Image (cartoon, rainbow, N blue to C red; front, side, top):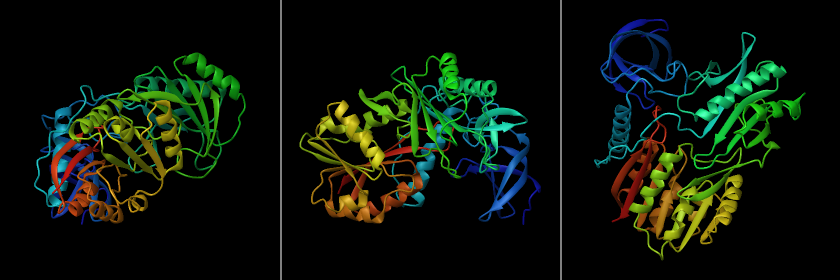
Length: 445
């Protein structure tokens, strides 16, 4: 039995579901962040959970030819990136193999998985960056949390965040120092600013700064905002989000627009979307456009089709497909997302889409007929109730968009007796991480 602090010599043979290197030692399994396949290292056991030991690298003894120097100096400490030390083509191979393994092991499907579609440059792609703010050694810092902790790793530039967001975050921290505005302390529950959230537009020159505060008003707020605007003229709107709760949830329910219109505008396939502080919007616009274009080209849509866009969020997929079909039914349970979707469809003159605020499983059971289904469920996947309704309605074509290969495979195992899998296409929506987005095209047998 390996104990905390034990040092062992081992060789990495594979990757875990979350991208850690896997070592087998005396019938025990050890997960090591930052260790690559075929590398050998001395590792130190940190803790054990659910029968698996988690370790960190003490000394690398044999390096992989796929290892590269990370762009971020704290990549191995921060909880955001699992793969900055792995060259990008190998990251894409890992994600292709991850999808194939899940389909084979969970769904018992031996199907071809296409190579993962990635980015020309896999850095600085995130259009949404949210950073906690904290006082460390009498200095205000911002950054990201260490893995499975609330300890902040101070970061000056995140290698996967929009460069404009990095610059703005550091500027705001410096201005907080000047104005003596204290960050929120989770232990004492004192202080003002909890998080900085920056949203950037890819196609438009618009940027939103969100200040998440623990209180409604604070001293010198107007002067503070004016100083931020002067130092960062590229910011087009500033919003204060008030979160007074003792919670890990970043955003509160109350907001105040301090400057500008309170939202930014961006586009996907020439459809414009209004994005507010709390709106869900895909964080990688380049890959999102590739994914939506792929769906349009491969779904075989017809002008008389009625299409259900399930788990639709703000309706981006349904709106991008609306011009190819007779009608889109867009169902989403979050009221704020449905409100945003209705505004966006109206602004774009899309009239053949109907938005329904309801649970996807409850709504699909009210339908008698369905031609095409597009489903993009959350990470936990779809429900059995929803999938049984799909089998009852028997749409001719299904596009399943998934952010978790394991729940995707679980759901496909339920559908595979009625549907043939025509295409499995992974997309690298989140470079430098272990996450992968997958599009599966199913055709009724």
